[in-house]
Length: 236
Image (cartoon, rainbow, N blue to C red; front, side, top):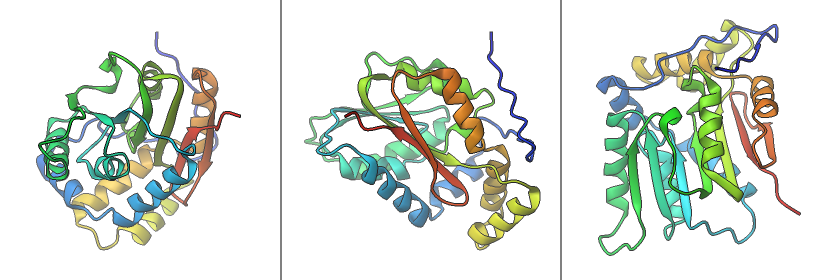
C-alpha cells in the first residue's frame, strides 16, 4: 500500500515530471551544462557537515546522473569503494565515462555502476556514506526514495541529500529561471523550470522524514533560494 502525504500547504501545487531522463538530447545537454557554481557550492556544504576525520570505506551515489557530483565525491575520497546508481542507461554511461577518466588501472578499490530504479535498489550491504543530489524531485512517490536510503544505511552511516525547492508561485519560478538559467540552451531552461515545479518544498520533506523515521537523525535546511540539504546530525 502506498503511503500518501497531504501536501497542501497553500502553495503552488507540485507538477511531477518524468522519473527518468532518457531523451538523448536532454541527457547530453544536461551532461554538458556548466553546474560548476551550484555543484561546488553544494560540495562545500557537504564537506562542512562531514564528521571530523571521516573516511568512508563504501559510498553510494544514488541517482548519480552524468557523474559531475560523483567525480567531486571521488576527488574527496579516492580510496573508497563506490556504487553509482541511476535508472537511466544514458546517464549511467556518461557517469562511467567520466569516472573512467579519473581512475587509474592500478586502483584496488571497487567501482560499481548499477542501472536500477530507486525502488528496486536493494544493496548487498549498507554504505558508510549515502549521497544523493537532485533525485528526489524526479520521483512520483517520494517514499520510494526514502526506502532506498533506509535500505542502504547502518547505524553510523553519514547521509547527505540535496535537491531543489519548489517556489511559492509560477511568478517566482519565472524569476528563478531568469536569474539562474537565462543563458542556458532552451532544453536546459525547460528542464530547470520543470524541475522547480516538480520539486518538494522543505515542509513537505520534513513531513516525509516524520513519516519515514529513518534510524538516524537528520538535519534539514534551506541553503539557497532554490536548494535544501538534509544530512546526518553529529552523534555526541
